[in-house]
Length: 568
Image (cartoon, rainbow, N blue to C red; front, top):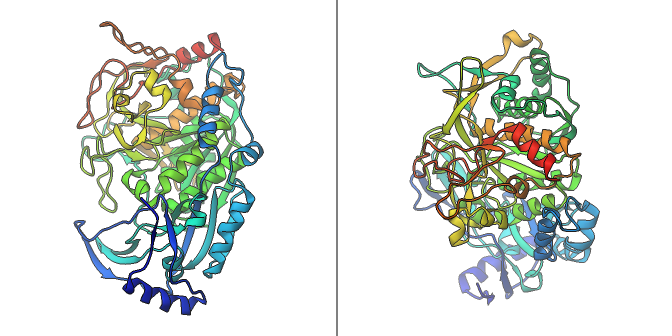
């Protein structure tokens, strides 16, 4: 998109009026594009236009800034993950990122001054200078970002969105990446599944059942590795329910620290999701050095970007689990994909990993607010974000079958497990080396790995809303979905990291490290994984080697541990 002079009579009239209200006058400006595009709902089923909102309506924006030397940081992550490279198994610190890759303090000041000139208040920058938050009005945002707003009724709820792309003055074009918060439509959902009904097979396992199923054997616990989970809404009750679960399962009590990001929301938006994440990640690990709970107000992209960013700037946890997602076109349009990808990249350079659920709608993605969770290919034919991010580990789902003694029998691709080809993320060097089919077109394939998800075959036992009554009042059986897959994978990774004294760094290159794609008619080999070759998610079928339903496969923990021990 080229810069242009904004000069239509209609817009000038509105600008002049709003300028008088805000004490700012600007009748002509050369604008530069950002990654935030227009969001149009007029033709979407279930949506009807209301009209422009009151310009004095309050709005909270998060301005994402462009990183310095982005390609250099990408090359650094590759060097840190390549055996034999002098930088292998090294990482950088947040201070090193700030000095070499972050936007400069003068860039932050320029954007802050610009926001202030339009009446924005509570302007604050995150420690890595990648995000600047501010409070203002829609009238101020209209002028500051050369955009406009419309209100809609979407399936009974009143929402708003920017009807024009967000732009900034040409002088800030090299600094501003995107403007988040200009809509409240793009929001993430949790894919947790409860087993219910006559088809429910109550084969519900405690953590030790998954240890046995996935061959933990003598692999050390995750006691040396701090981990995190990401939540939205209230974080109340997560720790107390975890304590009940630990007692019931005979597990050590892990240190828990709640990191509130933004205004605390008293509403329970998880419905047991966060109990699943906390209990199965620490439980699969046996124990961890610490569990950090990052809690944000709402599941809108602007809030979640700040939440992930705090995980990275704190640099306390080696890995985290994000059991939520949205159709990737949403974060692509609002610009949060570009912003979060940069945040995840900084985390990767620091040796941090986010394990993200691929969703429970098969080879489609959920369309909010319609509830299609657990129903394959009902939704948009796309994959979920943040699972599709090149710098996140996408965790898909399987149906896990055990023998009468609880030992691993086999797995098939779970019909509702997310998988497919990203329309917006590019193929990584580690997927390219694995000959992932979508890399032929330069596109990222999802998922990377998988774990148990099918609540109608082998589910997880969690403890939720226990209060003071104890385990007998809160035991819940039959919980699954890729919301289970992601924390299980996080727990395994905590064990592997502890085995290697947290030197494994960013997970994705390491997870693909030993994979050998088939050549000259030979089958691929998946050392360290159970290769799932049966099942489909709607569009895609499981097959020998990497596939779009289960990626590399599911962990054989002892086997992959031995690979890392034998190949430091």
